[in-house]
Each structure stands twice: as C-alpha cells, then as structure tokens.
Length: 174
Image (cartoon, rainbow, N blue to C red; front, top):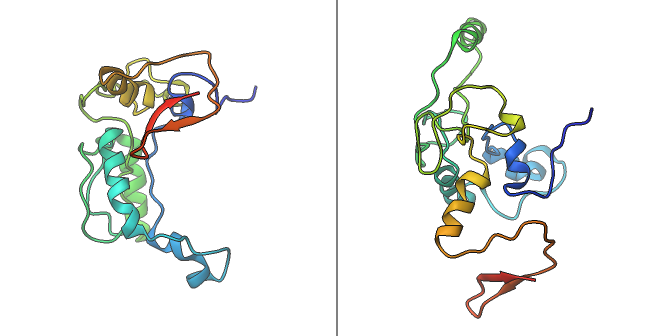
C-alpha cells in the first residue's frame, strides 16, 4: 500500500508529515561556491532566518537553542525540547562515545499546549494525522486563525488563481 503524501483536504500534506522541523544549513545555500555543483541560491541563510523564525512561532516548534551546527544567534524555538526517552538517551550515549555531534531535533509538535495546539501525548502516529490536535499542521495552526480573521473556507473546490489587492496582498481566490 502506497502512503498518501498529498491530498486535497484542509491542512494539505502537513496533516501527514511527521513533524520533523529541519532547516537547510548555511552551506546548503552555496553549493556551487563550496562544492562546485548545481547553483548557489539567490538568497542566504541569514536572509531567510527571520522567515524560519516566524514559521517556528506559527507552527509551534519545540527544540533546544544553541545547536553548534548552525550559526550563533537567532531566536530559540518558542517551546522547550521534548525530553529524551530511553532510546534517545541510548543513542546520545553512543554518539558521545564516538565523539559525534548530536542535538535534540526540532519538531513542529508542541512540548506543552501552545495557541491552538494541544500538548503532544506521544501516540506516535504523526504521519497519519494527529487526533490530539497537537502537531503543527495547518488545519490546526493556520486555518483557525484565518477563520477568526474573516476568511472563508471552501472545501471540495479547486483554485485556479489567487487574486491580489492594490497592496499586492492576496485578497481572494477564483
């Protein structure tokens, strides 16, 4: 059976993502310069950083600040990291023994209640949707806010065009 990764439903494919919240490294934006392959991005990690941080807030990201794999500075995730359980501790000990870098992963799964999200109760079924309403999928994080601000949600429709107002912002759909 092939898993479903994209579908036409409220929340889209975010309903089925596992909540893993990783960022490209600064070097990923400069692959032509550093590695001689593909092309460099037209923007830098530093230019994208405020948008990464805004998304961390919108999606209720949990994690621990200070990962030395990324440049110093920048905002900490809005929520603390999830605790390491027995398997994670064992993996960390093994990586420490090998002298390898590890860091608690960032996730769009709240370690405590946050905005419209409930605290993760560790059902372990994130890729099938979160019946608890914890995972940072847009049906939980974005649609309730948009509806409170006057948006209309139409299901079962296809959008051919997003319309823009004079200010250049989206104001509707055809």
